Amino acid sequence: MPTADRTQLNMVQRPRRLRMNPILRSMVEETRVSPKDFIYPMFVEEGRKGRKDRLEIPSMPGVFRQSIDAALKEMEQCISLGVRSVILFGIPLHKDPLGSQAHAENAIVQRAVRAAKKAFGRDLFVVTDVCLCEYTDHGHCAPVEGEEILNDEGVSIHCKTALSHAVAGADMVAPSDMMDGRVGAIRDALDEAGYTNLPIMAYAAKYASGFYGPFREAADSTPQFGDRRSYQMDPANSDEALREVELDVEEGADIVMVKPALPYLDIIRRVRETFALPVAAYNVSGEYAMVKAAARLGWIDHDRVMMETLTGIKRAGASIILTYFAKDAAALLNKQGA
Ligand code: PBG
Image 1: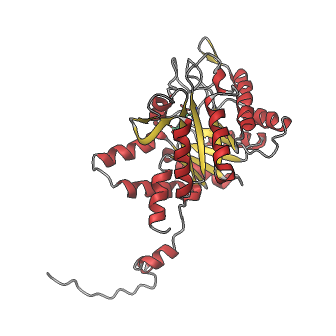
Image 2: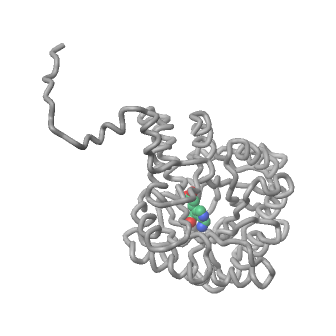
């Protein structure tokens, strides 16, 4: 082997000095991901009991539609891994035009919240997704008239839904419908009922995205006609995201979310720099599915890409990450003693 020439360049700054030793390298790390950052999304399904009590979602390996009992077991696992928060999505047995199972007292999410709070109390922070598309037979996030998606009628149902989650014991509600004015209306409804301290995490800048595909398969919530472009945002827009976030902040949002995460890291950063509120990012189903699929094919290193993804989302400015990777990432971080 030929030896390289030993030239001594006259350089005062050598950035590589800080990268030579792993201990020093970890001391100068600017971004740290922790299990405390995660909210783990879970799907609770009505009528699973008696059938197989959990069903893996084919495009989301490791994620299940499951009964409340099975969900409780997974929540316990989350807590032991240091993942202290979950967000619940419901899959009802019956769907109807107005999505009545979104807010019925004994509907699936309401029951799941009560069970989770009874089992884990303050050891688990239970967030609920407030939306209609999993509960309507047409799959839109508000009632429809012909082809029109009815904003204000949607908002009044979302208020009922948020309130029913609060009554069941939810620790935070997260409206994801993207109807105009829903955050303010939900804040009023909660306050009037005495839930003045219940925070709202608004899906503030939610884009009409192809990355929701696996979720819609999981939740059976694909629109039966048209698409969501009249209410979710156009991927081309960035200033509009700031307007959406501003409105939600004025209306009383406590945390603002950007969704999806990866194609919108610039939005996360802009929101973070413009508003003095915690920013959440949703690392959505399609982003998860891509990593799982490529890893299965042996095309990428699963754990590395997972951690790089989560680090990137945090570095962009998110303090909270909703991610299906929560358990995998927490297990890895715990193993590394991070
Ligand atoms: C409901 C909702 C969706 C997601 C979260 N809440 C789907 C949609 O808007 O079609 C997607 C989450 C994911 O893809 O992981 N409105």
